[in-house]
Image (cartoon, rainbow, N blue to C red; front, side, top):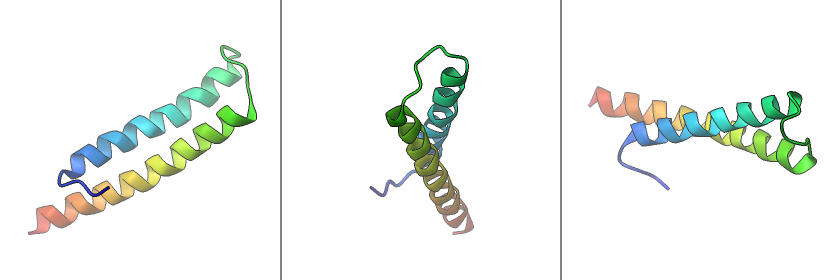
Length: 66
């Protein structure tokens, strides 16, 4: 899934990181019930958001150098 616009990857990464932060916050505030599935989902969203952000930033820098 390589896109031509690295800003799209960065925005997707921001959304995933925000989701990965909000779900545990809501679990701690006891607004949603904690479960292993939600914990794993928030962890996976954080990790994939981190990787997408790094890839998007690297692609952005590479495109700006040219």
